[in-house]
Length: 484
Image 1 (cartoon, one colour):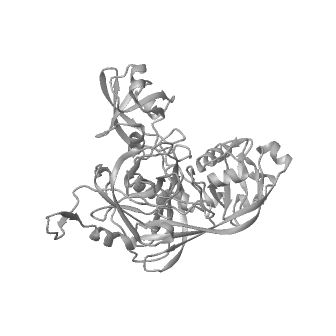
Image 2 (cartoon, rainbow, N blue to C red):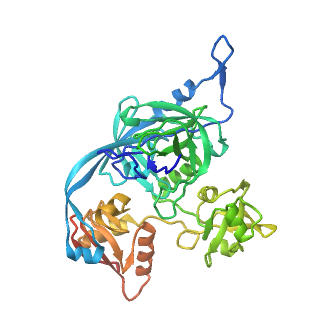
Image 3 (cartoon, rainbow, N blue to C red):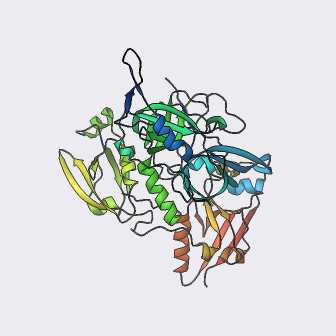
């Protein structure tokens, strides 16, 4: 098969033509995937020739009620205007006008009886309203607890009790060739179950565009289609082992392969979003790349597996531990590392401050190092969201769709401006897109945290000078006094 293009489990409401590439936006109607489990139960199906069949009914019964239909409402703009003044500052692009309401849908998985639901980030990003429909047809309004574009995961919350849930399994135990079920809502056909096997693990298909993206997908051949994004991939025991996220397709519909985010990644992301509102990303502070035969010959490496250390950041976790440029990481704790995606998956399980044992190959010799992982700021502290009580607002990173819509490379959208808070005092409205603060580009809460901390520690000038644009495309500047 040549020239595969990857499509996030979702399609635009207006349709997608043949040859579509990876598409990740809130108005996408996602698709589903499937994964396999080992020790699959088999039973005699009573055929006279003694053939044996596989029974998926128990697994389906355990999971179908905990997979929900996620429906979103969002605005799209129909007409465009060009402003030479805006083009001078932000480049050549049109600003969309005349917003219209559109709807899209995907899937989600109930994780707790009190209403926490996991789905894909691309299912809900940029949405104005989110609602969830259960298999028993009950419907709830959902709030977005947090989202992580780096893994394409999002956590929702509905106000309900005693909801059906799925037991979370260990995706590490999956083996290639095991049977799995994909459960979701393809093409708005609710409670659909398909079966397949695990085709590969730790697959990197280069579909995510976020900073510090983590791709270590479970690849299956279970049939998934638009609407299944965010749905469940379960083993034959009915345990959740993945969240369906994308398909390989030339047409936008299922063509043989689908990809799911393993629960090892999901569980950590969900726990962080629930506790902190943002993911605690642990970093080694290195640049890495995969190894093939040609590269191994060029670098005189003795192995074809592992993650090659191309650069080591100064004062990074790896640098402090003694890892050097040219080393090959072959093991994290007791887990063998065969590729960059496997290394990313293993490190993604930890938080800043955690200590891990990493085995590297240097020439013909192997060495073990204890590494204390750091955060994006270069320390071991917990990274918290910007204090909503201080600024009096919620800041949400621009989605890829919004970046294209406004022609921006970075930015944060201001939401939920409270009467008490610095933003309200400065007159900053909801919907305002912050592009730069104190002459620094901002694209994450961590960026704002760093700038706010520096400003508060500056005895001479404790003000935030903010530049950005309103939803109508008008460039506006604000000054926020942080001195008291």
